[in-house]
Length: 507
Image (cartoon, rainbow, N blue to C red; front, side, top):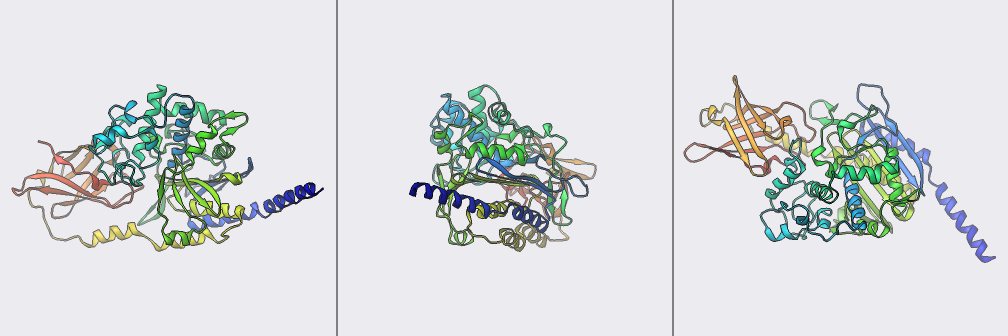
């Protein structure tokens, strides 16, 4: 009798706990937050206990147009793709086709890092997926961004990316190593990694709106938007990430991502199919690289004691629960996936702009279910975001230092020529009529006109808008005999580091 009473009390407790979560209230909060952040459109899905409790679109696909977002609208999930790559490798490990401890050079003989032969030979498949090889965060992304280089050529160029910390002695978020992981999958299976993930995950899960190239976009796709210094948020264009798809090329919808989350939250199994071995999933969600949590971050996001990176997933504790999560940043689109496995709870937020709304919304929704830290996450994050404008400040600082009335040290025609950087390749400066031009041999979409700024420095007037950067300059370097030696870039932004390039003039 006591056991029966205890059973009914437990059921009642679970019912009351679940009833406390007002999904209609969450729905209204999401729309209010979207308007506060001036986000044109977004899609959100919540899954709980193997069911979709919310999957819905908010706002419009493109500013100036009326088409509304729905739960099948396609958004770039960017770096949330990394979890798919890690899952593919876990399946190949489970099939006995490779091992986590295999050396990368067993599959990619050309693999090399910062001139260190020992490190290059020792890096394992596991190392590729947890940001501990010694490269700095986002370092080397300039190699692949809007480039026509193949994944193999990108990896070969990565050999010239500078060392930021000792091998396995720090954390540096690196897209390059996930591109390498994609090529390991190709070496093992004999086909592009995209083929394997489609056949073994996306198609059987019924992720019918999910693609891995902008060439395959459907009619129901959101338009990217970017913030500008002059005109606020404006529509942008889809940028191809085909050569870096293993780092962030997947395009999906909230309805499809709900299926992905439910499979992961169900121990890697869904509808009778075991997609990820439970043991392998445990490894993916085990911290391989830990970060220090500052006291300030603990105050702003309480309930955490550790935070780190597993394999393709960020991991942390949160009010006694394991949380696996990841964000994604694409040209004009941000996203967040957050799952609480013990609660069988998952949240995905997809947006068509570069505003940081996805993370606070995910925290808000998770906390509604945990009944913890029930504050207005959107409002607090928005206040913080609006109080910081480092990019604008960086640009204005550079503009304030312009010296008017100057001229070049030598005849500007002497700047014309081909310059080469081992990390990137050839960069060509030419003269067309009275104008000077700069072209990036493997990235034609980065072409620009050069306008004199001051002394031997020119402003880069890009031919097309770019999501991560706008204002920039290039300086021509002269030796003691006024011979043109090379060029140096200054393009302020937090992601695509042109300053890592040091092209020298080719004879």
